[in-house]
Length: 637
Image (tube, rainbow, N blue to C red; front, side, top):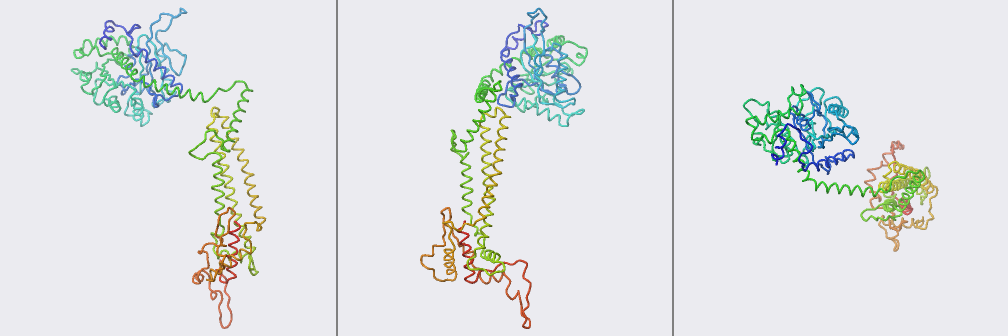
């Protein structure tokens, strides 16, 4: 098919003309180009995302003739040139075949060839020298004047009757040694950029290699084989065939005997630097290229498959076939993305009204809906009932009942008090006076200490409820359509936080006041409070038990006092808080002889230690005092 399509073009010295045979790519390539432009303008990651559009990446080392190949396909000089790296940003080159029109409908001369940049919409370039300057200027705007590289694309469309419809991505040439002010890792940057394009199965690879180099060590083919080891989507291009050593040729390369490729190789002869300096036209270079392959004794059998024209037809045909293979799956992905976007658009509702009065009404409607949803969330009236986790008001109920209430009910102020601690409190409350049988004052002092310790958990509960209300507000704002209007959503969230913060301050103050009320009056008249007489009886039972005496019938179960929550709780504590043995007392407290001594019938007193603590209760009266105090504390809470 390649021979039949290229033979008519070789019969005369012409560029491809308007009435060229139509290829599959004539219809598909412009479609893909339009999608690429839309994705680029919309910020859709069509390369790294699930929508991978078919394209051809041109890969080659510096000075491999890559730029000359692209200019030969276009038939114009338009790419930056120089001794250093020139292509520093990927150039997406869209070639569109257009019929030649000698004039427009307004009888003004119409351009037969022109270029358009995506970043300059509506601006047409008919001077290809200006196109070169704009590429250089846009490159400088993107990466500066140094020799660094960037992944940001430059998109250029060239319409001409002398090109075949195709899309190529000109990537920076592979370099090894940084020059000038290039980054030290310039080679790694370029290789990473190239691999980011060619690793995708949707990307064809145009690997450009000079004929006067070792093909097995080609940088372009080395990279392509990393991602395409079987050579199914790599097209080899052999350049500089006219400057190979005398007596040598590239037939082994072109036949695929050195590095086989399923899509084969195409040999081309580009202009040399002298031709470019002498402004030799590409059309003249094309004629010289035809003569070279026709007259060269080694390339006669492959002449019809070599040259720029053959390369253009080959690339256009393969790209069209590649697109046709990928198009069904690509269509399904685009349809799925479009349906998803339409659903999202429908969920957003109507747009913002232009009338200020309607805008105010819309804001009020949004605020009313938010407030109603907030109330429902707290009251548990949500339409979408969650069956997997607690949310809204149920979490607040959990904080109040399962965390706060149960935490307070489990409080036992006597649990951490030993009998020595209670004796110490009793003696401290009496001061210089003797302790009476029923220690009322130490009981009140210990009760107030326990009540003060409840301030922090009560205020902590208020803060937990505040956090849960803030959580509800945040979730509602993200679930409602307020996200369509980011500033409104942020204002609503800030106003809700301010409102809740303003409510937290008086709540904490009220909690502190309630605690002060409890401290101001110790309510011993509560019907569930054990009372002094009953506490005394229970204490006597415990004393008798400790001394090994008999316990009166009917009194053995009175040490279980009902708490306000209805649960039974031991008011006398565990056995571990009982009277310590004499040996333990001797170890812990100073003996009498250590506090005073007798010398010659005179009592000598010594200073007490810095820290004093009451001794363990020894007499029945001391035990009764401790047990009564413990029973009263346990009953009060």
